[in-house]
Image (cartoon, rainbow, N blue to C red; front, side):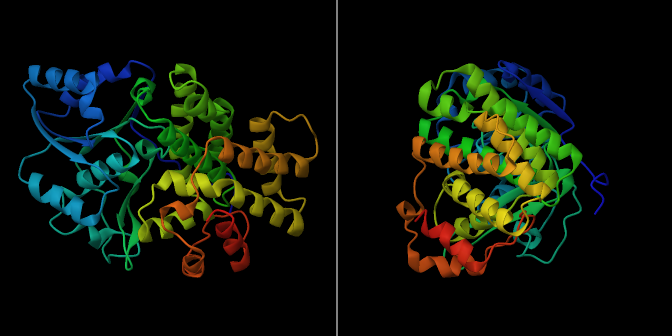
Length: 392
């Protein structure tokens, strides 16, 4: 594949910065009067932002329908929402919340144009291909991690023995407008900030070393790593009210959404897809807890098989940026990256998988169906098992 032969998809508009939430009523009104507002549990509804938004929309004579979700969306939940609002002539869907809320809104905006179940269009589940027709969609993240405000897929989960975690995907599903206001993340609890931040870091690193990366995604991922730096530590541990750190983290998260949408991800998200369909565990925790171990395994495998690899050099570049090392040895810099990630995992107190009911007895089953699409190197079954054993 020619490195300079690629396609890039992104939002029609991005509004980024502190205070940008004030633009939301005007952006919404440009689409028409009937709107569906999807938000998380109760946290956002308790904020002054929520009350201000409703007042502003009501003053503009908007007809507002509200729906709340409190967990990762399931196909049944999306179908239920579509059934409720199909005949309401919704002109725009707005999702304000974390990645799960945005994925729910994204799926609903896509399925309001259809008369069948969303399961019919899920990758690896349904047999139909979506044509991309949707209702206008605005994404407003209140956490910094998944980058869902920039991606072309909505992840839906069915947890259980026959569970799955699959995507509804089309390049036209990228939100029409992404509004990223770091002030909305200030109330995010430390634990969630830590897990989400590590998820964003995972996405930047995985997309950077992806075998599907391009000059565009490489420059964005490296820039995201430079700007994000250790912001996850600052916002989750040192000072949750540090607006500079929150802003840098939000930027890194948004860019990680762009890069994952255009370059793909690696085996960490392969693990996350399998684990998320079988256990009730937040996506950010799966990625955050496996990031260091998987990065180390990828690096050591590259050192053993191809020490002159450009992919190893990429890990070294990331190590120099995040670790601020001035060494000129690519192997040392790559290893510095995995060591730094190990340290951050401990400092941020990212939970082990065992805390969510996963045991060593589950490892073989997880490994047997874990995909390695776009991973920089093909790991053995033993490699995959070792990664999980170290984080059970």
